[in-house]
Length: 147
Image (tube, rainbow, N blue to C red; front, top):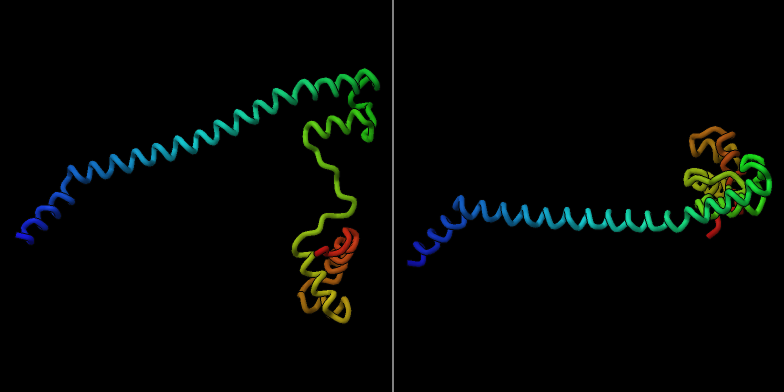
């Protein structure tokens, strides 16, 4: 009796109707996931649009101020308060004083500090001395490695 019951359950589990049911449930889950993903995009887009609507009048005001004071936005000095306000509104960050330091340059610098001189360090790294010197200058101009 038990064996017969198991066979019936197994046939039922692998029946075309059950396959369709599983596919339907999987499709519903995929649709829900897609809806959630789309909702996140819609929410982010709505937040971005709101930020633009808030920022746009302020940006226009800053540009008009610069044009009124200097005659043209192109004639406005780059270090003026109006240009700084515009940069702040559009999210422009100031350029770093020294050259940007890459992760490879940091690695080269660490190896250089652990070696007796530049020639030995360049040879150990398999790079030219000029590349090593550029890395040293970049790291030291940016205040070292900083821990």
